[in-house]
Image (cartoon, rainbow, N blue to C red; front, side, top):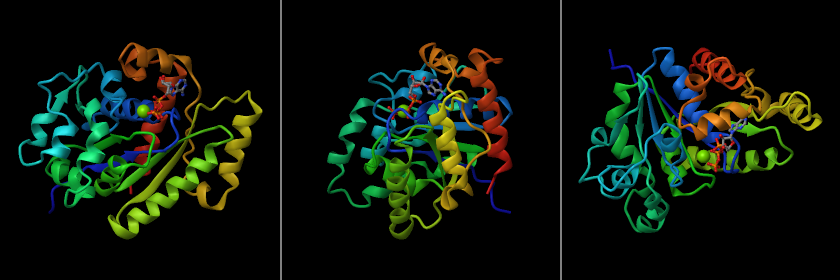
Length: 262
Ligand SMILES: Nc1ncnc2c1ncn2[C@@H]1O[C@H](COP(=O)(O)OP(=O)(O)OP(=O)(O)O)[C@@H](O)[C@H]1O
Ligand SMILES: [Mg+2]
């Protein structure tokens, strides 16, 4: 029997500030607390996922930048950090990753750099979760070339639909040209606020849209200031304040994520 492979999950939405990094950190943490072995790969040059887990790369650190730009020199296993929490590991990003797109412009197989670097790691984990930058750049394309699933945080905000259309178009062209196995596995409402008309209106629109409704999660992540406070404290909210709405929502998301295994 073939070795069990990790679920390879990109968290993506080109719109900024919709809760991508919070989802990577907190879904990852909630799954790790359920005993799943989790690797988070921070593919955003802003390195917020690493910061949110209390890890800052220094000059000695092997980061995804090294794995992307000098794959012959570095081994992905040497880039893995343990965090303070069991079953939760990280490959860190670096600000220089912002320049990787330009550096790799003439490189052969530049869409598959991450794939080449990380493919040996998948057998060690139950889930690899990738944080992506708020742009559909070469970095995100590398993530899509490696992953099987895309989980999309969708802010319950009037502009949410525009970003979704662009994302779906990009994913379609990646499926055609690079990775036929990629699929959107979930759309998760974020910053949901039951009391506001706009939050409810966007959720209703997602539910009644033929295309989006089939992939819409039942779990919505509510707007909750404890999530922002936990980011500041460099701790996942599920460990920072277990009884907060933020922790509860991400625990529910983790349970639904496991139930929706492909
Ligand atoms: N449900 C929520 N309720 C309240 N604050 C949240 C919630 N989700 C995320 N935040 C906070 O909002 C800010 C933006 O969230 P986050 O960094 O996860 O978004 P992002 O999509 O990763 O942004 P970027 O596109 O810049 O990478 C952060 O300070 C985070 O702690
Ligand atoms: Mg982010």
